[in-house]
Length: 413
Image (cartoon, rainbow, N blue to C red; front, side):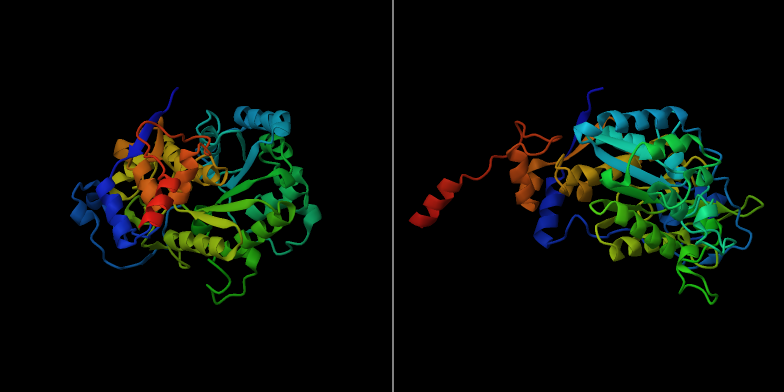
């Protein structure tokens, strides 16, 4: 289907942004801290929905969603992904590997999983989905001997990395997910250009410490959220020294107790170590502390409007993304490899903001060329010269200033 072009034409807003010196990357997210009950959740009054209380709820009776309910068999999509990697390696494909939980695994049976949707938006690319529903970044606290690689069986993030790099036996780690063997065997770590890593919800529900400084008890790094992410990335970096890493934060959600009563959202419900938004911030710490690592926000509304008043459209069960939610996140994720691969200006990843009420999955985002010229002149020049694969100048594209004319004017001035 031919994609329609979505052009940002908010020229007044853009000129205001430029005039005030604000960047597209400015953090203007809302500080959301609130209690939720059925009345609040169903309210259409934004003022009541956004009223802050600043209170944190430590929930001992927090109901754990079934994170494997929506995880489907990998056979069809993974087999095709594997074949595409093997058959097209000679064409120098952009190789993207995804690790994560059910947010990444969901939709794999019908091609609406986030990796497949990202691949559709990134030219000449292949995505390998190694996500498993219900998994954590951290190694289970019950596993003390984590250096027994011969008998390693955990499919946490660190375990998946061990299997991918050949440190442990793949068949042990993937014994419950044999379909992923084909996908994992389809690509060598040395060929990976981009890693996308999304964990946190299961760490939160499993009451995993944010880091080893987040508790009075003695935890090794591998048993903490931050530590496990750092260890996994470090190992991947050894096998993929030129790869870039993207931490996709945990997704905003709404939670109930075991009686079905609403407790609060990701900003206020704590597991004793922190709220899920704290885990999202910790993912940001990882991206800041690692070289060539970047954060993709799915928590703080910096790129799309997932919050109380839109949760029923984004989330199928107050936790898992709907197909539309996955398509929105995939569009945001795709801006990153597209920018690095010169498929589009890097400015697009900073300026694209999606409202689900007006979202069209067939739209291709394009920042107004005049705004690009004023705010990002170097990127605009590349666009005019036809350097981007996905974005070409059109009849509405301003002309580059005539350098010879400018020099003549300066000489005559």
